[in-house]
Length: 63
Image (cartoon, rainbow, N blue to C red; front, side, top):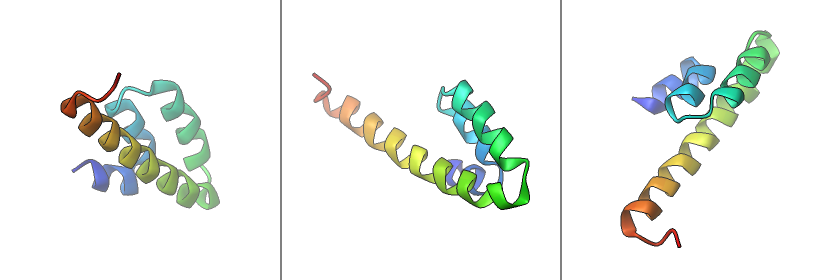
């Protein structure tokens, strides 16, 4: 579900993963048609990092 949000509404993804400032920056980027594609790519990348961090925390390897 978050992947769909990352592609369609990239700024919203950042709010769901707890990064509101990045969400605001992404919204500003997304407001331009040309900036929407980089915003979507950034959101998908951030989602993959968030997912990896969650897996590491669940495994108990975060230090």
